[in-house]
Image (cartoon, rainbow, N blue to C red):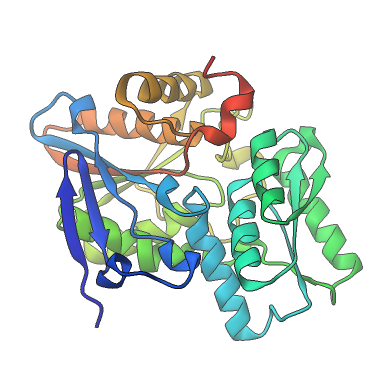
Length: 319
């Protein structure tokens, strides 16, 4: 049985498995067990706490390391991914970087279909791990990347393993088995509200199902851009997008729209006033979580900060 040790420093709660304190043999063993940051000072109410999972502590720099590892290892166990087959999937960046890192560690060739307008930092990181980038039409966004990936695989099905992260059950199960239990442990089971953005929907679905299993009264709040013209990296406006097959429309207790400008402004404030250099989906997450927290008289609100801000510097929004 694995016993988890909890340590606390100012504004941060860690969940550390004992073996993590010792030297380990693989970078992949460092995926998960990310700290929970205390952002309660932003709320301004003594009986309301706000916490956020700092997912850029994962070795690939984002929450998507969790899903990428589970997808790959489940595919190995099922025989879908074998030596000599190339992993190919559509991605806007973070899952692709996770695939590339894990592929490098395990010896797999990785091809990634990305919209041509994703930031150069994300392309550079994936290439640094040896992945090949195939660019899709920038005007079609992540949906265009999905369609192109499917056409490539259909032309040579024996060559590729196509994980299809948007429809892969391993995506949400990674969070059901890791992120959700970590949140419960780190809050002592006191979480009352979980707020997260919808992209592949894996994080929201997996964590949400795990929290509801623990306590059906926990409120699940789903964030997405307020309309199709609001571009927030990593999030989908589901009414006008290809809806991921893993998404459970009956799971959210509430949908909360977020404007891109509000997310961008929060992202800048988190860096300049609080020392948290995060990505724009993280800014959106804090924007939504703060709105929920300020509506409460008491409660424990938890959100997820999917990645750090270094991948977005070239956009110029931090200037």
